[in-house]
Length: 116
Image (cartoon, rainbow, N blue to C red; front, top):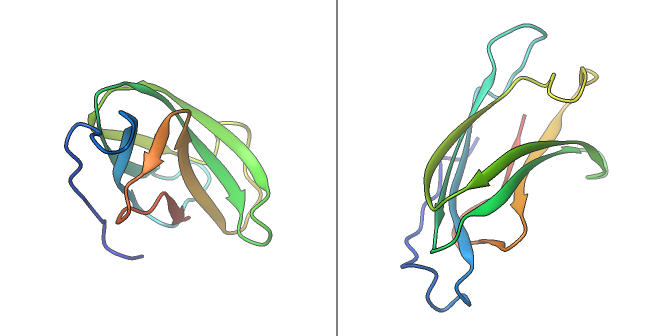
């Protein structure tokens, strides 16, 4: 897994006042049924809170497998956990986690996707 990437974006200026995802990091790439959850860390910058979702995608064709609602998040640093049980048990395999939200844009140097 690549090291976390961060960028500074002052208050959303130059991006139409939209909130920017400036970092996204996943700790613990391997999940086991009833094991310890993966810890997700992300940073938002800008002026507005956004409703954030974590999309679980198939690595084979990037088709959606599940969506986890992380709720309304204001600018700043955030953490969340992912067990793979949020929407029923995920079948064994490799997945991509993609963080998204209405009005949320990715900063040029930040990734919005991680392997799990």
